[in-house]
Amino acid sequence: MSFEALLRELTMIVAQIHSFLLHLNDGFELRLGDKDLHFIIMAVLGMLLFFMVHFVFKRLARWSVTAISFIYVFTLMTVLGFAIEVGQKITGTGEMDFGDVVAGLYGVLAFFAVYTAYRVLVLLISRLRNRHRERKSASGRGE
Image 1: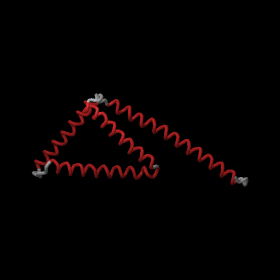
Image 2: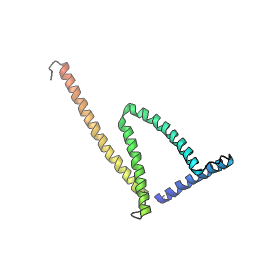
Image 3: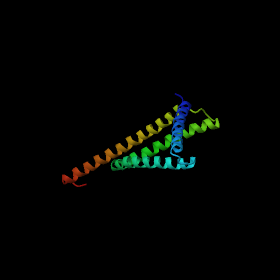
Image 4: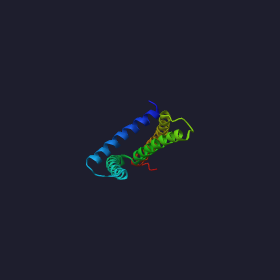
């Protein structure tokens, strides 16, 4: 499936949800305008997402803030990748291609993997040095 087809499909799903919500609005005679509906729906979705993300991030923070930073950056890079591709389509400066977004995200993952390997190596070396110092101190030789 091409990126353009994916965007069209997602747009159709959002349009169906929009129509359903408008039907509910009319059915209950709420007389809410488009801006009112956007205000309410986005607020409810935003709060639901906030509580879910807060729950997950609170648990991740016990292990590592790095995990939270990675999730934030990966999300931001995903949005940026899509924005770049949509911008290329609108301006005609390139071809809108889902593969480009995936390739960019693979780049983020690859560089993060290198960074993580470096951090793990530094942590292991640090722990080995500390153990070596503790053994020297325990044996009475001092440093």
